[in-house]
Amino acid sequence: MKEKNKRMNILFCGDANAEDGVLITTLSLLKYKHELHLYILTMTTSSQTKQYHPFSEHAVALIEHLLKEKNPHNSVQLIDITDLYQKQAPSPNQETRFTPYAMIRLFADEIPALPDRILYLDNDVIIRKDITDFYNQNLEKIEFVGVLDFFGRWFFHNQWRIFDYINSGVLLLNLKYIKQTRLFARVRHLMSTKKMFFPDQTALNKLAKHKKIAPQRYNEQRKLHKNTVIQHFTTTFRFIPYFHILTVKPWDVDRVHSVLHLHEYDELLNEYLKLKPQLHPEKNK
Image (cartoon, rainbow, N blue to C red; front, side, top):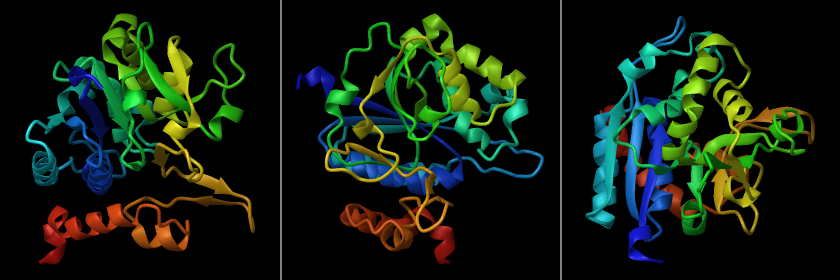
């Protein structure tokens, strides 16, 4: 790979509850020889029923130490967008089952510090194989690249393709083109005027006209396969032995073993468990 392509820009968003997941995803990224530049969007906000706390400087310091230890050129930047969010808060969608932090990725076009090409990752994602080819693909006239939502593709349809409903947990963004098409600006307007079931994901799929669909292996939402590159621990449905909703996140290591019977990431998760006391020192007093 050419030297100029070794840089990889990664975008995370979240409050204090996202810290464990971002740490695990970062550890999975560090297995590969990229120059990593992480950007973490956060804010201070509250709803009628909840008080949220922003992603902490302490967590960022730990992540920065791990990044620099691997490569002194690596970096991480915490960006508080409280003021930006409040100017166009998606008020009709702030009391859904999703936190307001699920929507702040859609303010990325308003943040000068963010580069034109950036890979957005949810905090419940693990990088299993090298993502170089996915990251460096051609984005000319493409707003974003994503993978079909495993369940949503059967129920939601926006364009001429039979399946076109993309899961928003892994998105390769062309911010330069998004600014030209005003995609995110239009999405924010829709979220601020209309209540939706999956507000950010629904609006993004409804309004995007220049999206590219990638193979399932780049956002595997159901179960691990031999060719899985990125595994996304989403909430899913199970029908055996009875219909039920299943949610298991990577930081819930015991349930990753007991419920998913998954040991693929034991080395990674053991590393996380060793670092967890440093991530949450207040819990060890």
